[in-house]
Image 1: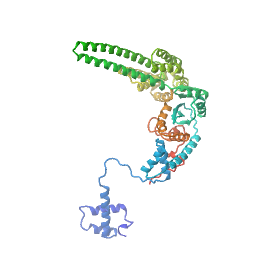
Image 2: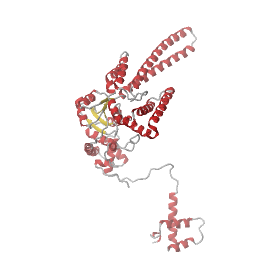
Image 3: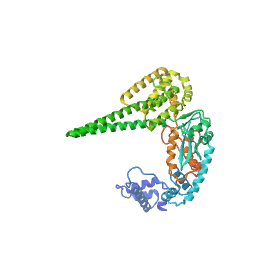
Image 4: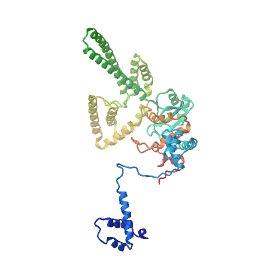
Length: 497
């Protein structure tokens, strides 16, 4: 038996090895240990040698820094199918999936095998999507996305980012999109980018409120402000450059030439600066209407007055020459009512909050909320920030005086939950589309099955950051999702050895 004695525990063997390996070991220690444990001196020496090997191996210096935990993977069919689905989610083509699996898992698969497994997963995903019919009264937003020249419609929940529909259709007219929207859950508001097909579809589907997207108006507006600013700075730089050339010249003819050029450049620069200042003032008038509330009174913005203000700016831009100005003018004049379509619904959502804490207190908190929202969007120059800070402090004092410290935080959370929702456009659908577009653009072929799989994977993946972190869209709408959502596609759970 020797060193194979099972009645000598590992803790005892450790003490034996330490006693034998100690430099100050007394004479006769090995014989004493052999007599104590009823083994031979050779067995004691073998235990000590085994302990020395373990110590030398365990205490040997290794690589610096954290190291990944060693895991053994069992490459079997379920793992290969799982890898195929995940690589598809990342936008890898079917042919490239076979190459990735051959390189990473040393498994050579044919593209036809990959196609067959994906077809099976797409069928399972379509069945799950059909079975999941959450009834959540959240506002929806939609956007068209094209892949391989075919139109697809995406319908997203603005609170959960759950994809309610991702469908490919042969046309993108109002009747087609209207049928898709009729299959979507009943919603109090639907937002889009003012495209003609979606607008006609929302009208045919009899959606109560069709909200147009502010981002499609403000983005080109502020983009043109930036371009005019760059042009003005470039003109000023040209004037300074010509002035330096004038100072470095001594001959009369060159002085006269530089002077004439400088005067011409100065005139052009003044015109560009004046143009920038005028357009910047108009852009600020439009941007001021984006705020949910009036910063002075704390009341919600009047949709009639807001639409009238946008139309006035649009009428002023009609006299400007240039395609961008004519496009902005047309949008401001024709889309103005649709940009404020959310107002009745927002007023209705705020009614319980106002009824509980009173209109004066909620208006004070609304001014507070609007100050913080404006500071995030446009911090502005130092005087503007200081004025906003003074107004923020005054609003806080008013809210504390009306509510008291005890109810202030509860009312603030209730108000933020309402005002913080997506009211003014389809930017959340655009956000989800930005995730899908690279995947669809990299595929040579897409069909409804591919869209069903991508929809399923988006709905079951938890968000990594933000206010929805650690929750998936499916969980946010009340659906039960297992810890390993790919098991819903018929895959076995992962097994690590």
